[in-house]
Length: 354
Image (cartoon, rainbow, N blue to C red; front, side):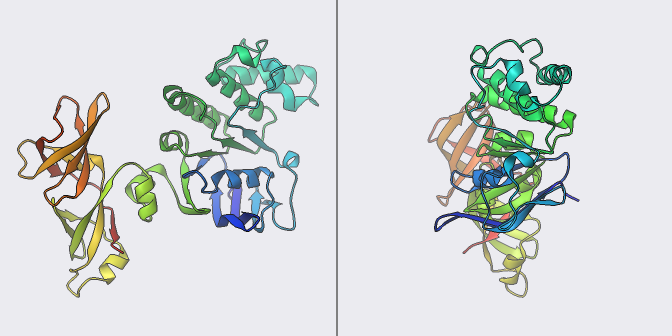
């Protein structure tokens, strides 16, 4: 049985629906993520799980027990759910140790002190208990917030954009470290973010949200290589859709050549009896196009972004269509130059053209 289940939940602010018939579940010990653009409803879902919002429809179950429905709403403090906020929400007048132990006020002093010291060691802040929040860096403050949320041993941990106030390098490093901490502690958690790198670094499963609905709930690998629809394909990673024509049940021809792979049923159904004739949109990722000086196909560089180890080139194909190619940075070509390219596609991603 999943630890957390959301069954067809809906929520609105006045007449504005922000969550619409949303369902998902999370197994015990797993880390999930709600990922999507601003305004998609992901934070509202997190607040509903925490008990800060009353849902208008459906139900939320924690360990088999209904904690939210239109008729039954368990108060936040009775849900055994911890939360790490975007702004850390530490008490500035309390020491680090007192912040971490804040939720353990009814615990015996010795037990509370031992728990606080153990958690500070877990998050890499052993010996910092007497400091105050303002004496710590942003990353250290976030670790204190995590330790405080873990102190009462919650059944579920919620993280609301926990690294958004940190610089890019620290955000990436801390997201890996927090995942390790949660896995070592066996904590079930849900993260809300709009940052794909953060989501991929932390989560076992990710729900891509748009307009209050989950478009796909899946592993990071499947979201990238097997997107359920064009929104997910557009949102995850980088890529460009180019026009293709179905040649048969497993073949698509694009300007750059012929590709083989599984085609969506609606593409095949629209084809001629021999499997041909359907126009489709084919997603090409930057790593699907390889720079090859010996290739017959040439494409013009119209823009480039230097990334240290590589360039991300935007290319104009002979037809005028655009594509992206990730090229090692020792291939330093100028805008306007034409380079040889060839296809190297492992996963065919195709959608029927509207």
